Length: 309
Image (cartoon, rainbow, N blue to C red; front, side, top):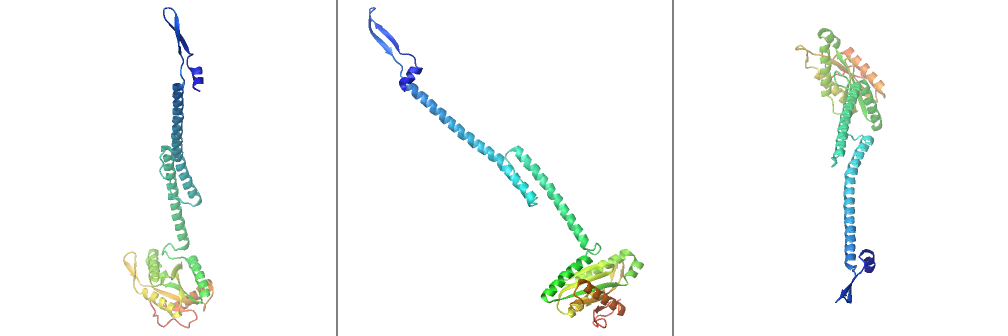
């Protein structure tokens, strides 16, 4: 190999005579040796290979690092977008990225998610407000007739399943029309709000009071152990009306309620039947003695309740 390199690359052999007194007494033959050249070439080749390998490794490392710097934020962005689309998880955010352009993209996407989350919260609040308005009275804040009848239907199903009693109290304000006529509608509204608050304060935690319309209210007692429990609660409600109700303009008025009581399953097995029975009992109480309670099926108002006016 050295000789091949010598012949191929190095100069041809140099032959010069050795003369003495114009006579050639010998020759000097100079032949290049390829060993050093071959070592130089091999070391240069090894250096090139080594530098190429190092350069390739560095380039691969930098490329992978750059790829992670690009792919990582894109994966995070895609994951957040997927969660927002499929799970409605608008509270998730894209983490910061090392590349300025991708970081700006993530910030813009986070700002968009923030606006969507705010809009979603606004819509949820609007829907809750509309749902509350659809099932509650705007003046007193009590549930309305539709909400009350739905709860009553569920209470009757549970009562039938567990063999429990359910009571419905039908309440009507006495002389409410006179208050409206003499003091104005604002005073009538104040009376209705006061009645609602006082009735609600006399009930158990699981009981329900609703405004059916006008000056009519209904109370659901479920479960009910005895009829006397319903009469006792009705007595407490009537007693709560003894205190004067403050009206706008620093005036006050004392009003009373007439209460009719109907009990499942004695007086009806459906919401309509129970409400009708309690309504009829209320009118019987109003006819016999204002400010009294009357249980459906009874002959007279309950003795323990005094007439209140």
